[in-house]
Amino acid sequence: MTEALNEIDRYISEAVRVRRAVQVYDELFCSKESVAALIDTAGEVFGVMQRALHDEILISFSRLFDSDGYKTKNGTQAYLSQLNIVKRHESLLTDDLKNLRERTTCLWKKLDLKKYRDLKVAHNDKAIFFGKSGPVKHGITSDLAKELLDVSIRLMISLKREITRSEKVALPVNPQEAYQGKGLDLIGKLKGI
Image 1 (cartoon, rainbow, N blue to C red):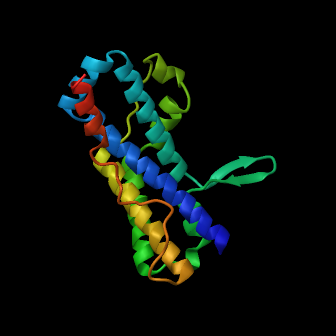
Image 2: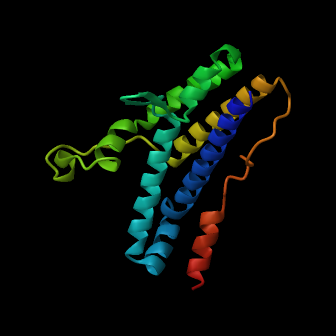
């Protein structure tokens, strides 16, 4: 049971970290006022920061939701993903947990991230890179990303309760600390420079 709880804790920690990154990205790069302040103070570095955080978020989503693992000559190496954790504890899923799992599945499909990740982030697809094929896009928005992460975190907390058969569970991080306002604080400081 300890290993299972450790896996869930690690997953929750990672999901909360990604949730915070999405919140900061939203505050820094999705507001005209923030973008103007970043361009004024960060200049060319602004685009580098935006792309780095964008790609980090997309890769992190892939780690959390994409698949169960990858094949090697020695077998399949399992990912620390929602899919694997939920599969491992399938027998404990209540109707509420099944609904949360289905909701995350639906939200993950809406993100439509895999092709974009494969062709633009993980690899430099030559046809895309040189404009020989149409643009590849994803369906991720800040609101959709935050909703998916919030539902997934709720699923993991509820699963942890089922495993421990307890009403209260200890969490490795505070999922309520969503870093709201942290990006805006940075913009305020940059404007004051």
